Image (cartoon, rainbow, N blue to C red; front, top):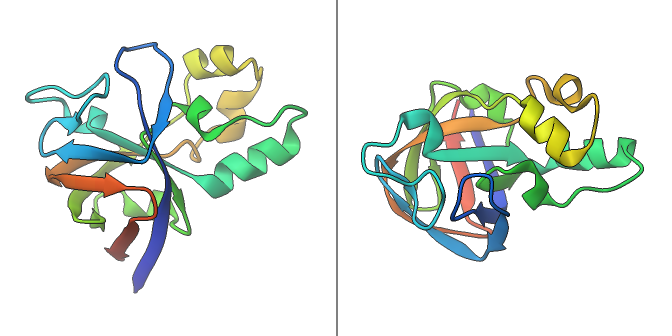
Length: 151
């Protein structure tokens, strides 16, 4: 089965714990991460190189909360639309011209829960917090890039 979705936001932070900013594009470096992001480093662990989250998950959470949260609040690098990320663990897929491998689910943590001041965020987002990926072949990631996979 072929699946395709889109990138609706690209987000980076130059410092760990720093504010996340949405950008129109970012350079993905194989084996390292997104240039300018806090986790981009030579020989970076595969699970820190690139993180994704579904916009549908963010929209559902926001509809349940009294205060809507911006996509940058979730501290993931890419926000997708139309892609079920949980099905991509262990799968190689393309984000525009960039080839990535789904490594593991990016489960929510107490840090994010405290930061967003949503007491039950970990429970609400368990198995819906996104996907950690290794960058296999680098290139430019741009908002509205296609996410293409065969699953």
